Image (cartoon, rainbow, N blue to C red; front, side, top):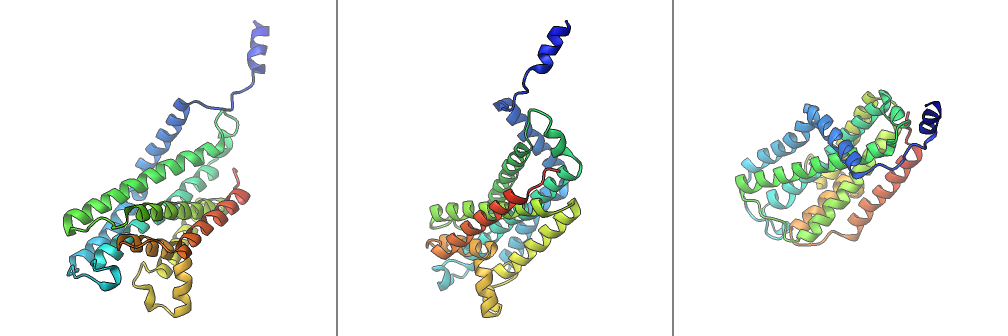
Length: 264
């Protein structure tokens, strides 16, 4: 019997988990996200509230700058979609990961067949699914209440949204890597979110800012994402500068997050 026990204890711990284990991890992350009421409601409610306030005051007149589309369609709705992704990627996700590190979840996972990075992957999957639900919800409200039309360049819009998500979540991972506590993660996330939002045109046309500041804002993730999505909605294509800005942020922030991330 002692020989059997020794053999069992000497058996190597499997380091690769099956699909069932992955599904359970994603399901657990989804349940935790569902229980976080503020984190669940605010990224959906605030952007839609901003759209409702703009939509109720809109005269639905076409604007030449947007190819004849109303500003609500070509500017406000793209801004709302960028808001949903930015709030989840820059504010929500870092607070979850910082909490896992603070409470030792990642350290305990390191001695199980699961790996800590699997928590990151599951959290990103759940957060992206949440972003997708928020985007669909905003588009349904925009269509039913204000008759907002779909983007004239749907491929460009999908590409812009994918790049936007990559850039925002890379920033979120970097914040997770650098923040020493949950409170710090929330503070850094909110500050970063409002900074890129203000410079990117989230509080009004970026042209109202000083020229040099507007130029910087247009190359930050929020401004580049808004311009790329707005151009796609009007029938154009995202510019090379917008694509390079979003891709560059993804690569730089993602590499820095990988370099500085701490599991405990």
